[in-house]
Length: 396
Ligand SMILES: [Zn+2]
Image (cartoon, rainbow, N blue to C red; front, side):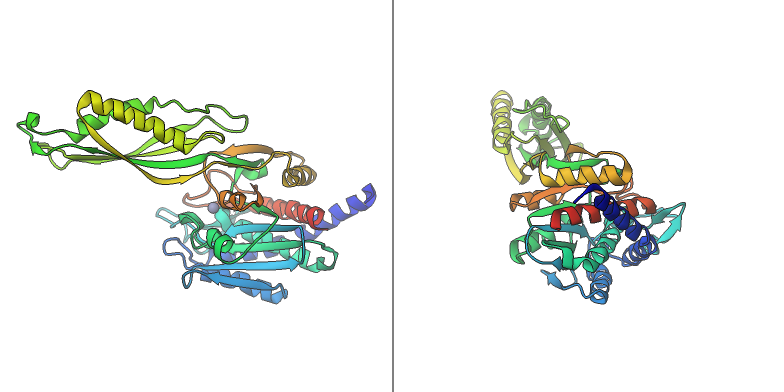
């Protein structure tokens, strides 16, 4: 394509989606007004908004429920390959208190949409629905397929959502963009740390508090152990895209009364480790520390793994990073930077299935899960413009 027809295309796409602004706001409000707090979920309410939209445009779609009411909806535009999947989640975290208005009656103020889910993740879904409309009108020009999914259960592990779609419903794609990383389209999530949750149990022996020498105090034994674990050395301590690995002591539970020697103490750890490090090495290092403390203090510990999600990464020079950079520059005049994330998103599950998946999207990093959650309407329009240009480049 020569540069003047390329410029014409860009102008056309930008204008089209600018004109969709009111529609994006309406759709975002409709989605926010469906109460899909997870738990319990009830994503069916938001999925109905998406279903009505797909129906009105004759976009073919499928519906998947592992549990009734925990609805996933997947719409398809075009056929063949490559395919690009964009998944936004339809569930929201509970609203909590202290909102200045009803969190499930969206309102507009100073160019922003307010309400639970506005920035996490319903605003993004509305913006992508506008992109779907645009692509549907241009379907005959597409060689590949655009897939828009509204998914359930993201806020509580995705077992009824994206994981279910990938493992049991044969939803597939070559590429995926997950607009659930905020940071106002300034970064591209290309790698995520591993997330290892551990529980350590200290076993003691109960006795009267006036005669502690008759018992074994599970808390006293836990203290030197935790102090040594705090000094844990990681195999990999630096990475060009990541902050260093971390270790959080998240909970300690033990004891009933001052005059009882506690027989049990449990501590839980959240360890975020870098790509190229391994959970096995971390666990075996912690086991060695446990052994040393057991010998020194006549203590007894158990270690159990609550969960482990390995680190993931896609190559930095993959086509999605190039296209996101190129079109963000066109629309916003800035280039987003590839970054590593300390938190885990559903891109992990996609990458594990061999899909080239990155996180990228609008929203402030301080908005998700807060009271009076909001998102900028301009950002939603900008995002739609960028995503439409990416889709055309990738799928035409
Ligand atoms: Zn989210």
